[in-house]
Length: 342
Image 1 (cartoon, one colour):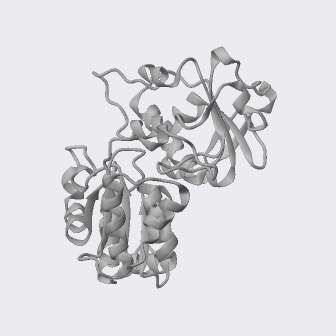
Image 2 (tube, rainbow, N blue to C red):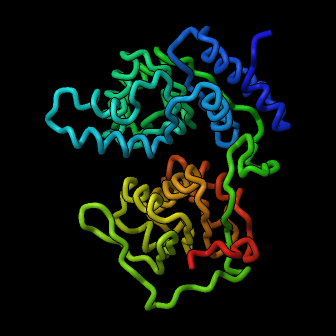
Image 3 (cartoon, one colour):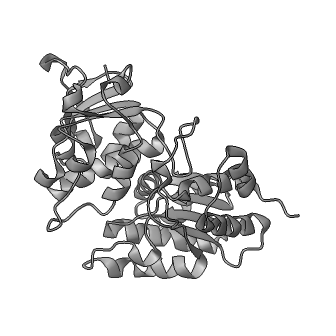
């Protein structure tokens, strides 16, 4: 009998894979055995279906670099930018990031920016030319990447390359496993956060910092952003002070690398926010979740009500994923003990 490291890992953790997960595990194990018909696998499906868990078990067996999209894009952008004007800038950037790796794992591939699509398309061409095996996860099928109709055509070369080179496998079972039992290691088939809380105002918020504790936290390019409180490893932001500010995705990654523990207080109902403000918060949740960094959020009411966007208003494309992730955090004042950024 051929070894089945992914199925064995599920059994060892007490998980019962659903039909979609078993099919995905089979395709990933084909890659491990060298019998896959293509250069890798593209797993896509709704939030909480176990895509990241499957990717991580593949990575346990295959090794090689593993990136979250945000971090990969930030690092790739920096390396390519540092070589502006060099003919082989992309090759050299990937050499720095990946070395001679033959396998690359890429979690939560998503595109909402035309520049991301162009840069990633260039990178993918180089990776495939090198014969790198790529395994990626996404909440979107390839054709759903960069859904904005004004810019979607810019992603079409990337989409065509993904569909040609990778086996596209839906992981779309009926259960969001993030709503099921948490695991002791901070993860589950749908991922997981080790610590943090969502605190409705009715439960009593963590004691706010005093006004004199506010500090300006440096950002890239000589800019700064006002935090209510900051220490060497923890930071406390007001929701609008952070998410309504002109803060980029790369800025958020830089802040997450500097501060391990976070409080974001006074979350404003999304019905009263601009979509850009909503998107910055969704991005923050994605980054902290992937890095498994503790987050405490204070809200004016139940989470689902606060994050609801009216049907006639635009909403961030990845809002459902953020809501699913925030639901994993503890609820109530007791859950914040020892975790506030003080």
